[in-house]
Length: 363
Image (cartoon, rainbow, N blue to C red):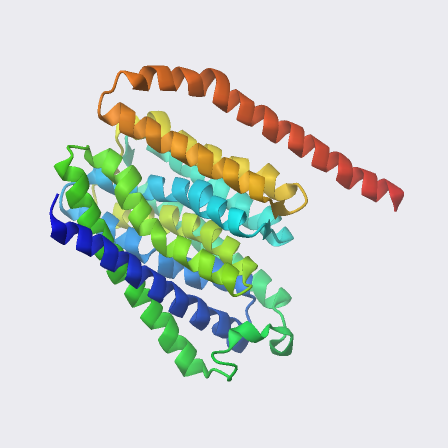
């Protein structure tokens, strides 16, 4: 393990923290100046910015003949965004989910995730498949802006956190902060990913597993940094919208655009079709009932998400290193842990739905 790689990882983390702070401040101010709600800014502007590292990694991986890394990066990032980033965010502070997210944005994310699974079944994301994925993203952007302008908060109603040092921030300076945040996030992610990939490669891990774990975690750190900073500044809408929007951009833009540009499309490894893509879809679907129950992601639900991500990562590591423990771990997950999680979600959802109906009946 080279000391230079370790330094690159640390430097990347620091740049991600600074870039996330600048990005949230600039985007929050633009929400007021332009007349869009923080939720829409998170779904569109911030999501596009925090997906920039994934796009850079995916394009570079395809050019270098590493399609497994490209696919693993996107699929792994989407899994991490829901299970790890949302999970950690909910543990820090319970996340209030707006009705627009539950009724429109999350279902669109589930639909686009399902479309990605379907078009990948033949082992390749073709040019036409890429067009379908990109069209789904464009549809969501247009609808989000249209709906968001109708529900945007008035400038005078916005919290004081939208200003820097209690002084009004001009539009040009907000744009400068946004651009600086994007640049720092991309640079930080590149440093972190480069160092992390070198370390993982030295340990003899496959390209797909590197993409699903090390690279995906590195390129998802902008989302994590942005969400945590948004929570600290009281922007819960932006924290959740950033994750949902980022997953949509990862599928529609990060995979769709390279599939169109590189005429032969992007090959999808069989291992990803068998496990990782279905898990990505399952994570997106699991978010629906949790978000629906009281429109809140509670701390215990966030802890459950994080625990599931740790279990998934542990399985990948054991499987990639051909450890004998992987088979026993798989049996425990299939016959005990996952059924227990499913029962828990069903019971809690039924209980919350019963409470909602009871409150409506009393009215």
